[in-house]
Length: 360
Image 1 (tube, helix red, strand yellow):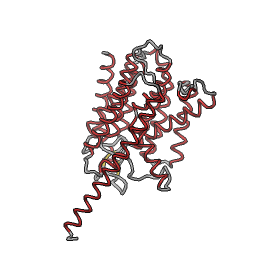
Image 2 (cartoon, helix red, strand yellow):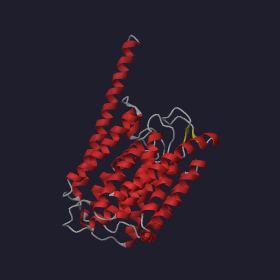
Image 3 (cartoon, helix red, strand yellow):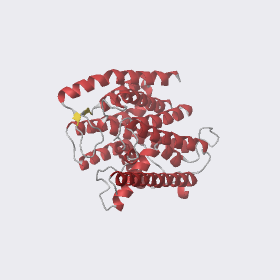
Image 4 (tube, helix red, strand yellow):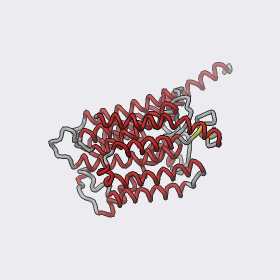
């Protein structure tokens, strides 16, 4: 456990010392995010915080992961380096969406082929144990792209993306430590420490954003951890006290907020006959803020929900995927409908108040 504490401290200190330098340099060079129609923030804000996150993560991992273990994770680092530079390029000179997607696909292929990190089956879900190799590759590629972009999509509020990421990373980090997968535990905690330092400057009112540089790196890291968790957990002996019966459902609980938000906005946009990729303000955090919540309050609500689902997965660790996933979907639908009902009620109340004051 001491090595994990050292990892967190190392990445935190590096991030904490680096971010003020990035803020100052970004303001001088005009590397900032300008407020606009679809953006919630009201002031010009530096958007290169992802550099500090990646730097803290990489140096802490380099220092605390044993040299002999680097042969197992060099492809993880290589893939994160590539996605880091894709995000950095997009923050400096915006890329077309299709180019950014192609870059993510290439990185995902690197992970699948070089690291052999993939979903090898449905892990008992629907009674399917083995998958043809091509299907395994396609399913893993789809999973990596979805998780990476789902995290990128929730990065629209002070403190939200960082808070959600830290909760997921700590959950994965503790579990990997308990099952003696020290390398992946260190990877999880080194990124969590760097994000914690970033959150100090990103909490409302934010002094800096992580940008695509940070969001893509964190999303890619979470996709790697999620796939590794699903496969590793499934292959643990049944006698292990740390084995979850539902590998897929438990992993979904660990990253539930980004997944639910992505599913929700895709469904809403298709229902409105809009492109699923068209930007708007239909995200969960936008909906909660319409009820009068601040950035900090919205972040705390969603972070608490994320933590609640993780606790639920732990409590139901003996429940199979079919039941756990069905429960997750039901809870997500109930939450979404409840949220929409609250918004409609609040809007109706505002209209009523306006009519009273206008004399109607």
